[in-house]
Length: 99
Image 1 (cartoon, rainbow, N blue to C red):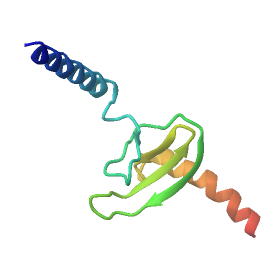
Image 2 (cartoon, rainbow, N blue to C red):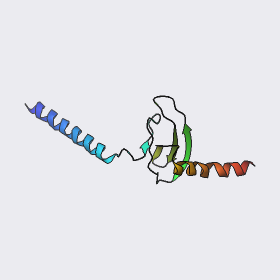
Image 3 (cartoon, rainbow, N blue to C red):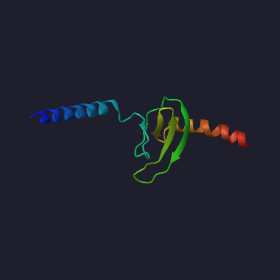
Image 4 (cartoon, rainbow, N blue to C red):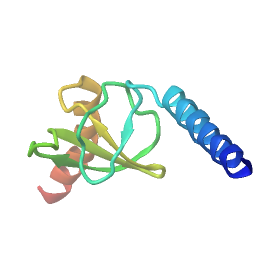
């Protein structure tokens, strides 16, 4: 009987934690990278960007620009104008220094 009560409490804690996690992680919020980007965000990343890399599509991975920040890497939609502008901010100084 006591074991069942402990098991039920543990399951309740896990369930509540998963609900809180689901609520706090919005579908439009930038997604941190695990192994590859399986989805991209259209939301503008507000963290300072340290670097970036381009990910090519190779299912299940999707085409993405992966921005590196102090908090980690985030998958962003390469078609978004703000993403293109951020990439150009990194590329332009490199092109002028090699010319």
